[in-house]
Structures are given as C-alpha cells and as structure tokens.
Length: 143
Ligand SMILES: [Cu+2]
Image (tube, rainbow, N blue to C red; front, side, top):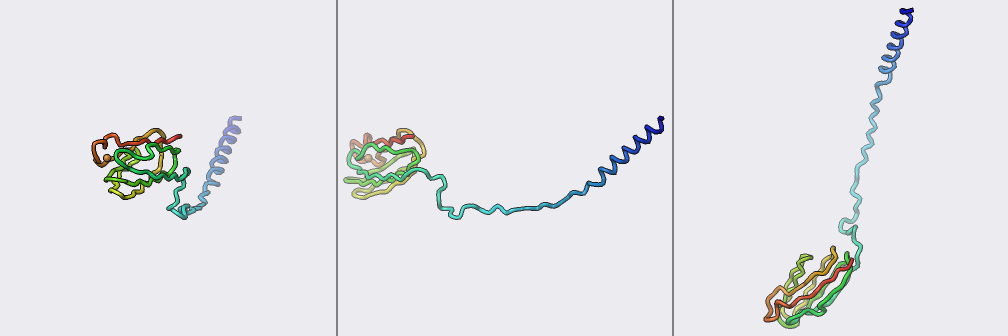
C-alpha cells in the first residue's frame, strides 16, 4: 500500500516537472514599436486658444487715459492701440507684463492674453507732469 502511494507521488511529480519544462519557450518577440510621430503639423497654432480678440483704442493725455476703464473676458486676447496726444507717456500693466513708452504724438500697439480674472490697474510709467501719479485706469477681466 505504501509503495503505491509513493509511486503516485513520484508520477505526479514527474508530470508536473515535465509539464513545466515543456512550455517554457514563449519568447515571441512582438516588437511593435510604432514610432510616435509628432502630431502637430502646424506648430505655430495655439491649441488652447479659446478667447476672442478684443481691440481698443486709447488716448493718453495729461493726466488720464481715455477710456479709463476696459472690460474684457478671461481668455481674451487684448489689443490696445494707444496714442499719446501731448507729451511722452507710458503704459504699464504689470499684472500682464506690459510696460511700454508712447512718445509724444505717436501710437503704440500692445497685445496680451488676459489669462486671469480680476481688476488690474494700468498707469502711466513715464513722468509727464504734476498729475502723473494719478494717471491710471482699470482693466476689468471677468470670469
Ligand atoms: Cu505720466
């Protein structure tokens, strides 16, 4: 009786071992290396552009900007055309990285994307006289 059990044990061990070694060569080289080609055909196009282009004409004159308040929507591209009517003025909008000079009688174009909402102050950045410190306006960016 003990012999029979031993035989079954040995047989099953042999079966397990041979079964394992029989199918251990599955090294199929499935090399489907698809080259990830760059998708962008036109790299100059901004994929995330959503807003509109808003254009405004401003005049700078001692000691104010006209209009003194500009309202746009977040995501808009803002184009400002600013003309100085008397002396040299500046146009500074630090929240959007803008700071330019507008020589006397000249027109300057400024463009930026309003990528955040809130109320931002733009001001003259070139000393133009006694009222220079109060020469400012407000850019309102709505959500
Ligand atoms: Cu000024």
